[in-house]
Image (cartoon, rainbow, N blue to C red; front, side, top):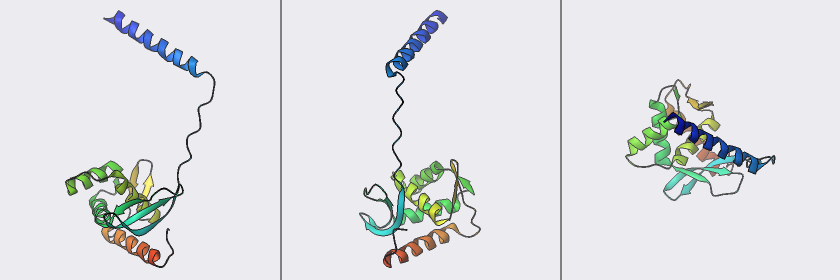
Length: 155
């Protein structure tokens, strides 16, 4: 049995060496430049009024409908001071009872970071607010909606 494992390991090492030799000394291509967020606004989406995140690539914006935005704010309000994306995403799925596109949660969290409502540190998000997070999220939405209507968005 040990002999078979050693032979398998030798074969795997030989395979990896051949792969490395085939690649040669050519440098790997550089990673693609990230498409930066250029702003947020409130727009009419497929499912009603939504938070829209616009990117520098000019691609269609990511949108999060208002009811989902409100639910995410409620989940963050009920979460501990420090939380992970998956904690929020799984709780949103649990409360809705259905699959929610993860980009809707990501858009909302990025907007709330942009607004200064939460902070991002490594793989965690931190809510240092001492008052109701639902109120903070509603104020952020209302402020963005006013700026959008005044023609100042995306912000």
